[in-house]
Length: 302
Image 1 (cartoon, rainbow, N blue to C red):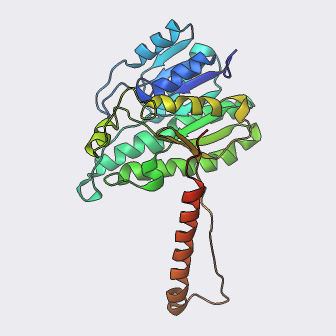
Image 2 (cartoon, rainbow, N blue to C red; image 1 turned 90 degrees about the vertical axis):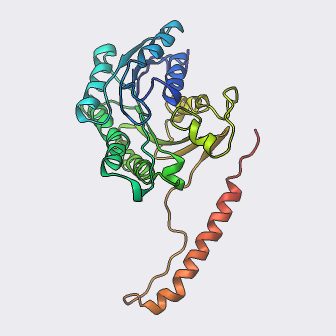
Image 3 (cartoon, rainbow, N blue to C red; image 1 turned 135 degrees about the horizontal axis):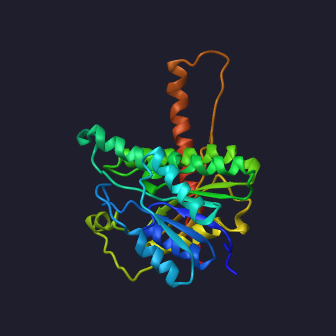
């Protein structure tokens, strides 16, 4: 008996990389899986049936799976992905919004289309795929479902040449926090994953930064993300929601949420003179807080 025995899951962008590893982990733990992948290149162009290979891998393991080739970038695509799950398995318990593409450029050189397509796949893609599932939860009064959303270190820390990608990924973290409040009455948990792994989207970026990619090193690969996502979808994670879980380079962590670190109040409208005095104090308090958090967040060997 696996920790997901009897569960039915949809994983988008699951033909390769992190999504594929999640599908295989889910299947090994007893879940039935819809493997969604458009099959395109990393910039979102093209298409192919790469999902079929993952479905075969799952069936070879003795599991149950079916493929879907729709794009997450449209409302119709999101509805079709949901429909594939219902038609194949009759229900749905888990959604992992993993599909993603890259169109990296500095903002100075970025065309409007390169901004829009990232928003369509990443941020709107979460809406397109999640809305049918949330309606399924509400209309069937269904409890204890799971929604996992993929953010990125680029969205949470920032990265050169990724204003489009970073903005979308930061938006996903906000989407998660709000959605967690909306579905809380159904005991549905909604969490964000902040993954760092070498995949076809990132290998050349890793090597361009002067770091060597070693395919045999699990701390670099997408397989390190799968058990974390699997656990978050299990019954053991029933009370874990609205969190940002970080998994990168063999490190497992939880990230702080937005919070006021230090504040002042006044009886009258702020003056420039007051701000000249108080703003540096606030900035200094933030620096001190960041240093403390960095020290506390240093990984401990287990």
